[in-house]
Image (cartoon, rainbow, N blue to C red; front, side):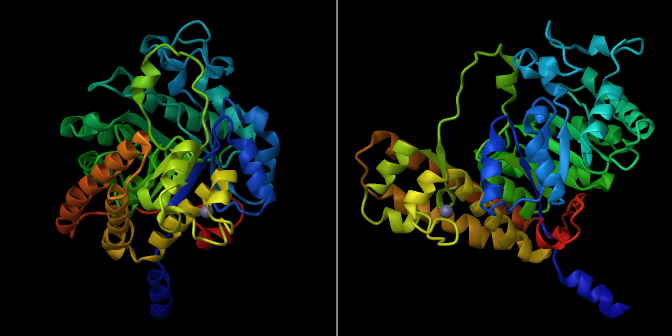
Length: 428
Ligand SMILES: [Zn+2]
C-alpha cells in the first residue's frame, strides 16, 4: 500500500493545457489531425462557431479528447462584441448588449436552459458557466453569474446532462485582482458555486504581460486556492502562462493556436470596427514571441540567426525555417506542447526553479544576443529591443517571487474529462 502511494506521488501531475479552437482554427486543427501532429487533448469550442465545426468536434470526440463549451455569454453583454456572431445564439441579443437589469428573476429568456440543452445536444464534456466581465468592485454581474451557474447546474441535470460538469469562469482585469477586498468577495462568492474548476481570465495578463503583471497574477491566483478547486488561466500563453503554471498559481492554462494568448477587455468595450484579419504569425520560442513573415525574414537575414532562432527540432520542422513559415500552426502547437511537457516532467516543488533556469534564463540570453546583432530593418530592431526589455523585466520579479514562495500553496491540476483514459497520464 505504501509502495503504491509512493509511486503515485513520484509522478508529477501534468500541467493542464487547453486549446481554444476559435473561429478559424478548425481548418488548421483538421490539417494537424490529418498529419497526426496534434499534441493537445483538451479543446474549448465557442458556442458561436460550433455548428460550423461539427466535423472537427466529432473527430476529437471519437479520439477521446475533452471538449469544453464556452457559451460566449460575456460577449453578449459587451458593446464591442454583442453584435458579432454571438448575436445569433439563442441566448444572444442582436439589438443591444445585455445589461444586468435584463437578468431579473422575471426574465423571459432562459439562458441556463438554452445552454444546458445546447451542451447536451453536442455531447460536451464540460461547460464554462455563462459569466460576464467583472470590471468593477462591487459588480452587479457577480450575483447574477453565481445564480446563472446554479441554474445551469439545475438545467443540465434536467436535460440529461448530470454527468456534465461546470467550470466557473471569472472574466476580469489584473488590476481588479490586485484589490484584496475584491478578491475576497470573489472568492467568497465563487466558493459555493457548483463548479469543478475555476477559470481565471484577466485583462492585463497574457503572453505579452510584464514581469510585475505576471507576478501580480500569480499572487492573485493563489488567493483562489482556498476554494480547493483547480485554477485554469484563460487567454494566457507564452512564458507568462508557463510561469503561472510553474509557480503553481494555476494548474493549467488555455489559449488558441498562436492567438487568444492575451485578453484585452478594452477591445470588447469599444464598438466593433470589423476587419482585423489575422496575418500569418510565426512563433519563436527562444524569444517568447511571434513574428510576421517579413519580420522573420529580416531577423533571419543576419548571419547566425537561423541556427539560433530557426526551429532546430527535426521532428517539428525538418527543413528548419522553411517549415516554420509553411506550417506556423503545426510549429506553434508542437513547440508549446514541448514547453508544457518539459515543465510537467519536473516535480511540482522544483517547477518554478526549473522554469527560471531552463525556460526564462535561456530566453533572456537569446534576446540579449539578438539585441547585439545589426539588423537593417528598423521594425525588427524595435521588436528585439522590446523583447529584450520584457524578458529581462520578467526575471527579477519572478526570481524574487521564487525566493519568497517556499510555503506558497499550489493549484491542483485539472482532471482530464475526455473518454480516452490513457491521455490522462500521457498529456496534460
Ligand atoms: Zn518547428
